[in-house]
Length: 309
Image (cartoon, rainbow, N blue to C red):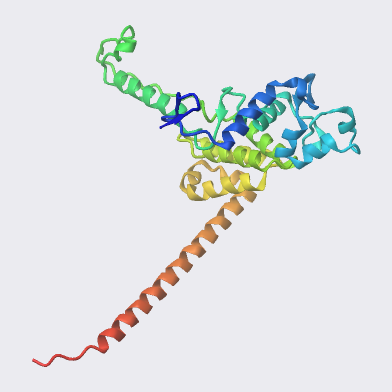
């Protein structure tokens, strides 16, 4: 599809779609982030400073906007603020950097990969593809064959007839779901809740939800362990982990993870109880509907004339 201009030329939008008002807003915010001359407020953390705009703060957080624009607040009069978390502890610089990038770019830049996280993109390929490659190479080694051409210089030595023990294959952490990344996401969700930034809070919670769905063995255990020991976690994030644990309960009977956290375990079994109750209620309603349909069918059939042969 092309759009003709007043000069007779055209712009090809094939594969991209036409521009939208939201595109203009996003691009404008991105340019505004680089325009420090027009900034009228600043975030400060550990000797670093981020120039921001009160207009942008008003788009995301009524709390931050009030802090920056209400003269009753010392931060507003000073033109800068240090963002504090729980127990009045200042947030580390990389959390403030992530907040600024989110407000201007609508994306969450993770510190472990320096890549942006969007909804539905943080899948398990980073670990599962590596695992598949390692499994393939291990299978070749165990069969006494040569490695693929890419590793042709690493041929398997000839079998001398002795049975050698197989070395366990240890897989690295998922590059898209590193366990240490959970602390970052928990803190970002807490920050968003504290400063009333609903969309950022939701984004951080959704990425944790994708973490626990990772194919890497033990990932859900790691999520449960961190959620239970983190102290303050948003209620929705905790609920997402409870729901995921309830749906995959079988594996925890083997690991004993739930036994270490009785309060979390109780919430999981409460969730299972509610699910079971809803299932029973659905079955009852379905049975009532079937019985009603049978009665209607029998009533209609009873009115049919009897054929005499």
